[in-house]
Length: 387
Image (cartoon, rainbow, N blue to C red; front, side, top):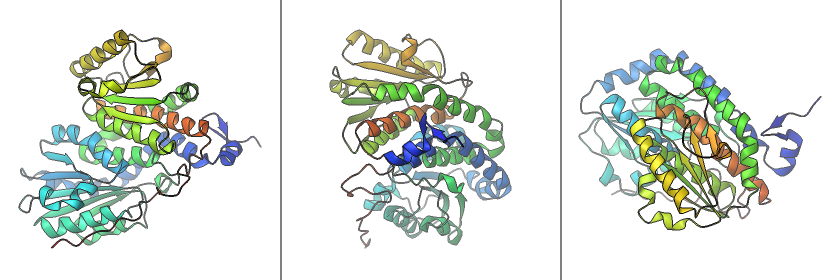
């Protein structure tokens, strides 16, 4: 029986290298997006019964929260959800809510706290929901988690809320979150945009993501072999959150060996561009919005004129960015899609690049932190009593 392959490597080779779970979880994302949508459709009536009365409140505040990668989900979604809902939607990490709750929670504002958690066991996640219950008079909890046994999973049921338990396979066993990130992001986008609306879109999103993995795994493997010392991810509006997640994946999977940073194309000129040297790779996430895209193109043109970076790569759903074909990662089938739908195919290339960088450095992608000081579920956090 032939050996199964993921990202072009056999299952046995990946097991030996300590990267089987990471490779499998990157590759499974298209299937998991479809499974997540099916799960949401099965619970559509329950979801609508919970959310619709709340979204009818004109003063409703929605807080998207989590720690690390789970916090970046909120940064990817808050601007687009605020525009769609016509309500206050804010991304505030649990790590901020817990250390200064008096600055963030509003006692008299009806609030939906949307908590994202792969495991649902981080101390800050648990503390944030408890503080919300204590400090906000009317608070409702929507928990989006990948772990049915986690502390968050049961919390919403006990406190005027709803738990969305995603498919078990999204409870990533590798160190770095990949399919858990994409599926929690998708779930929140779907429930606030309309589960039925997204049912008509999930196939196109999943196909585009699948094609990105198939078409560009080898390209990302070759890019990892080029030995860049610095990697910069740039994206406008919601893609700035995605750029932050892409940078974190590289930092995590290389155990901090590469210098990484994120910014927006406009913000990059204001000092951060000094990071660029002859060993720098720059990756730009392009918007489908014509106005926003004009700024992406301006920055790309400037980088080409500067000639300081080793390489600039564009990830785009539309043609015409002006780079060589080898430097354009083209998303198929989403040329006219809303930018939020591009989050899913866009993130897989940085995930794959980080995976191959980890292997190049002789690390085990499933557990790249050799010292054991950084863990899959954060440890050592002490939650102080709020007086």
